[in-house]
Length: 387
Image (tube, helix red, strand yellow):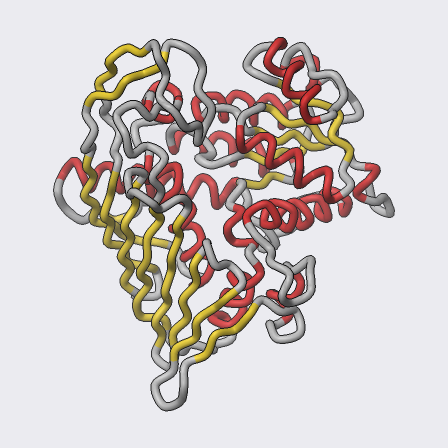
């Protein structure tokens, strides 16, 4: 597609929930043609397509894959469908952007990675947090030695949307979401982000998981992610997936890490914090104040760097869409990620290092499996990688 523009690229989105709508919005803001969506049922998909002002929804996944106008497929369906949906799209010759986790098991994610890499198609895992401009700035700063040798990485990812026993979502069902929940859903974002920022993969973990709400009230009807208010008709369900986790990690470069993950922390809506302590300086960033980066020093005053293309390094400036003082937030990270992905589509193939690929998605599945094993065995587990 060399020489084409983003407006000539066609996309379709599989999944019509909260995150699917975010994908659609980001694509439309980039000027990509969204030809339709695929839902869990044709009725639901039709309703969502009308609400979003999209073309009529596809009757099925197969109908979408047969549409020659669709160049890129975005997978935002429940976790247990990621492997089948992403593989079908790749086999149909479509470029693929898949939500995390990439698959339910490392065997599935390894299979997707093999198919994706042999296809020559663009493949991306939706680790959008990397694309906050100040995170791009920190990545470049660390790479250039701006903090010295990285020694310690600390932080958390906390939410409260599953605080009550009446809160329900499909992710609570291991058959749909997987045997890990909070760690896989949001902890994976923190781990991918810190590996990206430090330029170093996680090599071992020591984890403690806990399910505090062991019985929940599941509504008999459908429930949207982040929905509020208790349903009237419910049934009791035993819960096996974790509400909270504390995880100690080691990185390839020798740095230590400490992460707390929770979906039951009252008042924390989407609180991701990360601090990187190096031999000569520190940097700290908070997702709910995304346009500020704290920089710590020993022999001079600390600083707060605003997200301003004129003040950040080239990597941070390139990820910004707006001038300083004009807040860029969560939805903008999707646009920045897809801008990188779709430029690769226009160039005709994968672009290593510019966005998270299926290799990154597979790696996080491997790490999550090690975390689950560590919690079960009560000891540190080394990450075993085949590549």
